[in-house]
Image (cartoon, rainbow, N blue to C red):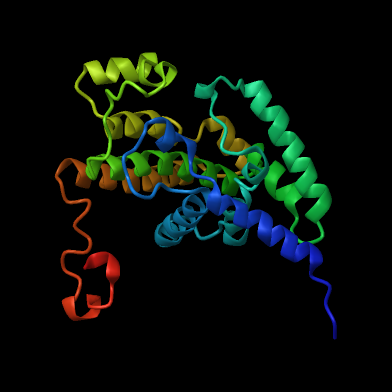
Length: 252
């Protein structure tokens, strides 16, 4: 039997573009690191986080749907790039070009993946699965900067950092309080980890389950932040079995 995978291959290559799109935030903060996270790295990190936390989350969640949201939620960025308002792009303009990208992807590849439902469902937080992915997405932004700060790759007073970012009122206030960029991102993005009473009704979940989901996601982020504070975050490889590392060029 012959298969025509023309669209499948083209969609795969559109996903592949995400591996060449470095996330904008670290670039704007001029993170001094040999390799910065790209959008594919970000997607994989979200998959790993949800897989690690799965045993603690409610069993009724649809993990096929969660994985579809994670894999596809940033696919429009293969067309639009990773847009940030700090470079002068309004929310309305970002929504306009993102909608164009979603429409293109949905119309062209909906027979391969149900991108119309996946992308629009995520954008509108249509169900609890989309809401969970959105919260983990926000947490991951803080995780990246917690790691970069732990590696001491950030100079918040670099004069080439754009003023709209460096002197943003929230950022400036926190820096004057003695906070570093990891503190700032942790505090800022954890505000997005919440489920309102109205959302409980929308998603048909109990307040108890909503609080449990929020607590699990916040606890994961807080443990990362705590390990950053006590200087143990980067210690994962310290007790690796040395004989197994002899061919690891990165460790040599």
